[in-house]
Length: 210
Image (cartoon, rainbow, N blue to C red):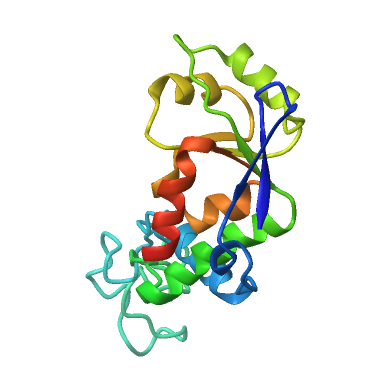
């Protein structure tokens, strides 16, 4: 499948680059993508929520009153869950939310997400660009020129560039990442993907070999 190369002004350069069909031409596996996104979202949770059961609440060691003879319900502790100030029944406890997936499924999910973006027109290959210093205005002008400033956009670079990262940090729904480290979640979450020309080889290598 061939893709045109864009200038940062939004115009076509007249060049094209061909991406292999075994990567961008496959049928996206939606369920694998769902599992990968679910896994990443779950792993971001701290899982430190906690509540106190009747044994954890301070006090309540003494029996409030004698077992028989008072004409009221028997009670063994003032920290019973049915009492005010008592413990919580089946309350949340700290636990990990990690979802285990095989490497094969994770690779399929990322390849499917990239193929889905390529097939729905969300993938654009652009000429390389760099800034001498962080400039959100220049970054925003590039997004406007490519007509992707009004939707979530992911910019993929061959290597991490702190200047570009800082330039995009204050722009809503704009994310800059190294192409070899892109995740399924980022590809699914961003409707438009701007792939720098020099980053094509690195992302293809990752999609082929994991």
